[in-house]
Image 1 (cartoon, one colour):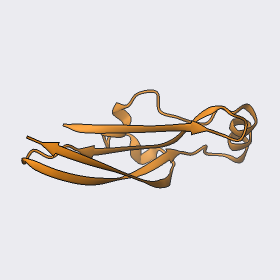
Image 2: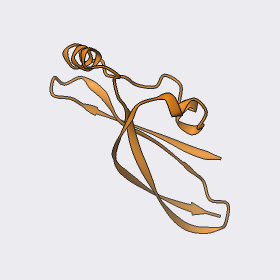
Image 3: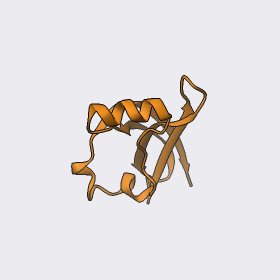
Image 4: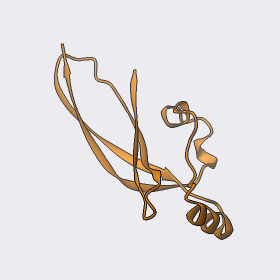
Length: 92
């Protein structure tokens, strides 16, 4: 099993935009586990698309969270690293 994380936040104009996506496998062994998730955000492929998305406030984002969890198809997607999120698990 995996946990998929989608982080959203306001941009300069107050629109809710994606700040990052990430996924991590849930540990099976009992105890306390801390995992750090590297976050990434999709990028536009051309300067015109970047300007249009900035102007309209509609940045590229994934509509299906399975894209983040699976590696299939992501090799052709342009993404940018966007920080880290730390999650703690208490497995019984």
